[in-house]
Structures are given as structure tokens and as C-alpha cells.
Image (cartoon, rainbow, N blue to C red):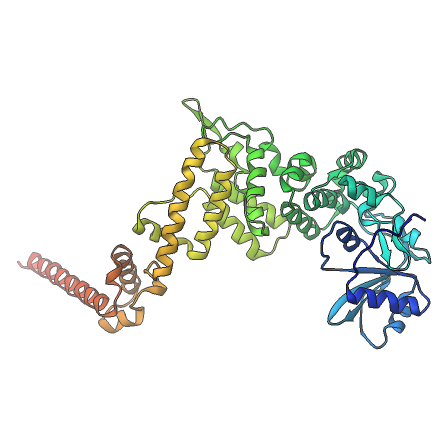
Length: 467
């Protein structure tokens, strides 16, 4: 067994308590997996897992004074709540017979941590640690961490055949950690990537979004695009597609990847940027030697909607992404009135989200003319911030008169909505009009004007009927 005593890892108080309690009860126990990896990297893990020689029922007995949840009892996992924090504890095990390319047909509990580490996906995740034994490193995980490499444990094709989800997880870890996938591991992943079809859409979606949110998302998306394409086949047409545009230095796919890396690191924004130009190849045409993509935003939104439904993304997430993709190319006006009309359509929160998207789109264009265009985005954001902060009216909610007020003045039916919209436009153009008394005066004047028109119309009709 390869043990590295010098590798000191600071365990959380809760994990230290769990390991010590199991050890005092005659069982071996270690912190394992991603938390150990992140600790070696100098990161602060949020979730800790423990592996032990104790069987699930023995673990429950050891922690009989604590709250214990049987989260995955048939797989040997129970969760112990320590200081209100959940710690997953799993019995050493080995697995065999992955007939669905995802889950083991047979799980066998074992008494040796070495056997347990052998079944894990990547060397960087196959490390175990406790303060007594130090760092258990059987597969060169520490070396691969130092060399920034994602390498499968043992035979890569076997690991990916056992669980196809590991294929996209390899890309996700490369993105998260800024590592490269080792050559043999990458070759096996690309060879077996069709196995991702056997994985639940929800799990694929989760790993895909985590990939987009990695600190090295640009390199992960560009270097491992064949695997990304297995998840979103619609992206393939963007590969190496030259834009022939004075606005763009990069081909469509590189522009997309750069925009993902440029936007705020939140799942919604990263997903928007991945899809925002996905339909450009379908919308492309050349006019006077210049490439154009009229209507690509709407087409891209349709593709995003279809893909996110296929991946079973949460409905609210999907709708927000689709809205931002469809409107990412919305022209930004330079007058308060026109900007208020956009704010009326989008709402303030969505408008500022669109600004974030526009910044990332602009940053990923790579041309001087694009840099000049950034000033317009800055101006639009400043205008919107001023309008919102000052409380100027751009929606019916902020109008100083209501539908009930109009009904009291004599409006009814569709006329109520029409008058509200008319008054809103007047207030958007002239903010000082948004006072109850002034709006009431304007509405009453409208009634008088309509009454005069109706009188004239009625008189004319009666005159025409006279013999």
C-alpha cells in the first residue's frame, strides 16, 4: 500500500469525530474522494465522505447516539448528522457486472480500503486519508494532481464501460480543476461516448452545467468538444464555422466558448452563452462579402428550449435561459423613452441580465469595432440604473393610477386597459405626469374627447337617416 505520511490534510471537526469514533470501535475509516483531492489542492471542501470497514448496521450501532439516515443502505451508505452537518459513511466495497453501463449489478462489502479505492473513477478521486495512516495513494493520484492530469483508475475503457457518466465527468473535472485529460483516458472516453445515451438526462444536465461553470471552461469545451457534442449534437455545425464578419475574429464555436468563459460564473449565464449563437450556421448568408445571421437569436432560443427539455432542466431555469438567448441581440436604444419601452417588456431584473449577456458576447468577439461597441452597453446600463433608482415609470405597476380608478371615472371593458397603456406611454415620455391628479385629469379629458366624437358620429348618422 502506498502511504504518504507527509501529506497533511485538515479534516473538518465532524469528519475527524466520525473517523475517531469508528476507529475506537475497532473499525478502520478514512476520508475519501473529492474532499481529499480538494484538500491536497489547498481548497476548502464543503462535502466530506467517509469510507469504513464497518458494515452499515455496525455504523448505525457506533452512532446510535446520533441521528442516522439510511440514505443508500443497499449500497452500504448511511448518513450521520454531526453538529447539524451530514457526513456520508460508506462501507468498503467492490462492484461488478455493469449491464446498464451505469450501475453495478453486484455490490460486495469488503474489509480492505485498497479494494474500495480500486473501483473509483479517476486517480485524483482515489485518495483516502486519516491522521493515523496518512494519505493512501495506490494509483498515483497525488502525482496526477501535481501534474494536473485526469487519469482513469486502471483500464480506462473498463471504467467508462462500467459507468458512462464518467465520460462527461472527466470533462467536468478538467473544467473545474484546470487539468488535462490523460491521452489514453481521453481516447477511451471518445471511443465510448455513445454510452452517454444510457445515462439519465438529469445526471447529464447536472454534469454539463458544472462543466460550463468550471474555472477552465474554455479549454474544456474546446479540447473535448467531441464529448460535448455527444451531449448537445446541435453544437457540431458551429465547429470551425467561419463568420466572415467584421465584428468577429473567431469562428462560431470558439466565440461561444470564449463567451462562456467571459460571462458571470453562474449556471444560468453560462448556459445562455453556450446556446446564444448555436443557430448561426443555419441562419448564415453572405451579402456584399460580409457574413450575416439575421434571425439567429430566435432560432438559437428554439434550439436551447428543445435541448434543455431533452435534458430535463428545471422549467424555470429553461425559460429564463430561452428568454435571454432569444433577446441577446436586442438593440440598445440611446433615449430614455425607448429604453423604458424595453424595460417594460423585460422587467428590470431581466434587462440587467441581458446586459451581462451582452458584455460577454462583446468580450468574445475579439475585434476593435466590438470594443468600441462596448461603450453603448455601458451607457445603456447607466441609463437603466438611473431610471430604476429614480423610480421613473416604465410599467403599469408603477403607474400612479389604477384600473379601478379609471372605472370610477367611467371607463369599462377593454377601454380600461387601453387607457392604462396610453397613460403609461405618456409617463414614460414625460415622467412628471405620473401623479394621481394629473393622470386623472388626462383620463377625464380622454372621456370628454370620446364623448364629443360619439356625439358627432351619432348626429351625423341621424342626419343621414332624415328623409
